[in-house]
Length: 289
Image 1 (cartoon, one colour):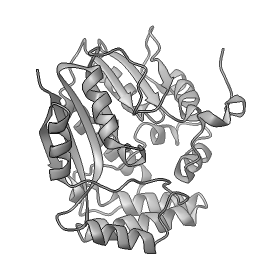
Image 2 (cartoon, helix red, strand yellow):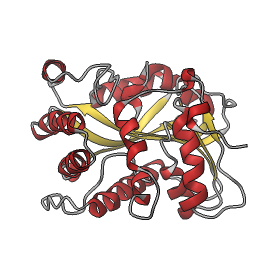
Image 3 (cartoon, rainbow, N blue to C red):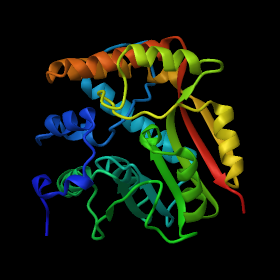
Image 4 (cartoon, one colour):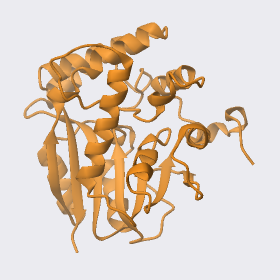
């Protein structure tokens, strides 16, 4: 039995403004169909070209998905868990790429999961085995220990109450040798004070467009966190420059959809990226065997 978003308990909803805007931007139709697949920053082959054509952004977001999947070393016949799975686009990408994988998605916001089931049924890769979507906190996963080959967390860890607790859960559910692939906004060397000061001035707090954002880690902070949880950093790609056209693309989408506050938040993030205070990285970690 399907469930409408109006029937979802308020305890299973996270009201981030940018997510609410995405619901309004996805009424259906082929033109909007690509938006849900890459609900994250794009990886542009030619970042010097700042053409804001939405289709170019959608293609770049798909390229970012592929980069994350490659970083995690996902192959056929593996068990994959996407934490913070959004509208299911990353899982559908994997299904088309590696149809033998066993896939599942987790999100704390049940509205997104309801929409994910609808979108995959309408636009997704045909399958006789529907992808299960589970409402859960990424720091407390309802998953058996050592049952997963690969985990993903694409552009969502800054929302989590604790990266350390998430990594602890990751170590628990991954099989020995299993991988976690992520994207995250990482603090540049010596930039943490500048990030905190500038985001406070721009009004980017818990009730802002992008909602709660925990303090970013540095690359060294991620390495230490991984070691403390019996994992090691195996991929560390700084793709900041290749993501820069994302900012004008999102700004145009938000202005066009009537969300000037979203465009202003994009401006603040873009300023931090231009000065390299905030870097966008694709990273992967492997559980030691």
